[in-house]
Image (cartoon, rainbow, N blue to C red; front, side):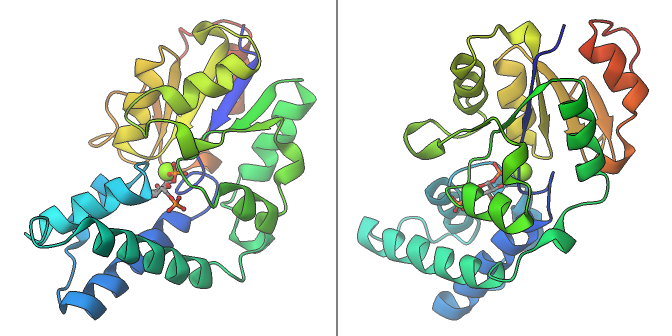
Length: 225
Ligand code: B16
Ligand code: MG
């Protein structure tokens, strides 16, 4: 019996993963005149701001030439750009199907948590107008980033539940790994090629089959679409 669903934010509830990477692209172009390759984006998803920066600097062969102080400045500036890119975020930015799914879970008395690596998570769900749906928002500040399971375990522990009672929904390879390492059921949102460790994969949240979800919630994990 499932009692808690833990949602990732960027790339699951809204397209804010695009703004994260756009902000990185802008700052790397501005500071180093380098065009960041789009293929790097996947490796920045679900990981913290500083870890994303490490991935990016490595992809540009810059990791050895930047001091810790410069890294902190770059990360701060990236966050300022990101915040300006999402400053007008509102209900129109919620992915199709999200509200229908949240309403369905509320109707079924399922607990809802936000399990995002983003320190901007609370501001974003407020801007999207969906903050009231969440029974708990994980504070990622002192937790290890995905692919470590800490963010998902934190939500589970808050409610005193076991992994079998929790489901995680993620768009990132690192996020699916984190859910599986927390020994929870993983719903992947995105491509089968990238998220093949998930227990079930949908192209978008709008495609999650509510009949399947009902079976999952009631304990029948066998019916995978
Ligand atoms: P911030 P998620 C993650 O959010 C993003 O996928 C990742 O690209 C970003 O670096 C991370 O949040 C930290 O975000 O700089 O706002 O603290 O996908 O776990 O919802
Ligand atoms: Mg994400």
